[in-house]
Length: 224
Length: 248
View 1 (cartoon, rainbow over the protein chains, first blue to last red):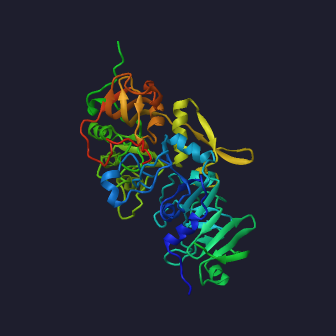
View 2 (cartoon, rainbow over the protein chains, first blue to last red; view 1 turned 90 degrees about the vertical axis):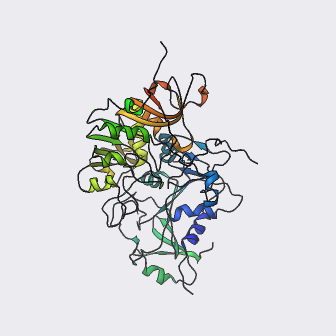
View 3 (spheres, one colour; view 1 turned 30 degrees about the vertical axis):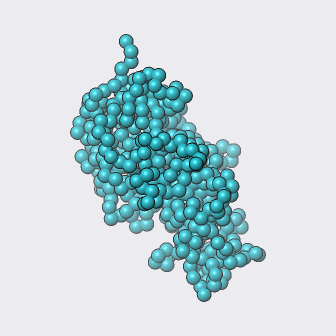
């Protein structure tokens, strides 16, 4: 049976890219979900633009009274929990961490991504305005940039395209694209199809992808 | 005579802000680290044609009702905003700034967040300009000098300075030394260094010697006026617990 992965399943697949001690910055949307699926025992150090490293999970509604604090939030404006060993710093130091290349992995949302790995994700579709926030610095300077997205838009428009049609966040920045039907690696040769969701054929994935996909020799089903 | 920077009221602290002033304001995504009482006082004071430097253009973030620089837009006091995240993520609830920017009533300079932070830091540090890779090949590149370093293209970005910085800190001593609490810190320490007049809004003012000198983040020489918050607005905060969590 051919089905698309849920947003949680996309996040679960991305969590497999994390490693012990990785310094990770998560964008807003599906990326935020990834932290829930990191294997128990693995220590990932989360970074947030507003100046914290090593904080804990988002405060749940049950914990609100006891833990919510306006002075402990993430870049998505969510309350997060304190963890032993966390630290705080100001914005210039925070972007020293980003621009200086000290982020191992950033997971970002995607509006469009090109065959060269150009990312466009900051301008709101149809509104002519947008927020750049920390996304440009992250996309330009992180060691590894992973895109988390549905393969096509809600109306079926392609998101993986030959050339982006909307303003770029950063050119040639993407390393890996994880969608609800495929895992695609960005290489100098082009986009390599590495994994597919259960039940999908290469032709079906290609049909929803504008650039020609290179099929990996070891192409396999997505494992979560 | 000992240094005395304490001002009794927020009104008095902002009374000399002239029309046309450039003001930096600590701000991220909610009331934490936002000097909302100073902003309220500036709204009441009424200075116009202001240039605001802040992360957002106000009115977005944690869904708590509080007065950030949104109220300066509502009161038509802002000519220009230099920001990284100016628009509401919900198209059905555009902020007052968004409406004015789209209508051409207020000017927007949209800046990547790391570039904004470094421009502010440079402003305080006496560095007139610097090169950064962020923005090459995007709309940010327009009109900027490009130069290659180790084969990587970079853009020339200029320092930002301000007439005033409104900063939010946790505690000040009477010398103006500041300590912050958690992610409240964000842009506040770098803004404090980049302005001609820095005004700090704090929870507590203590005697010299009552702050651990090793813990001071903003040296007092950068702070010219200190005002203590008198009414706790009741936002969620765990002030009785520090963030120094111990393993159980």
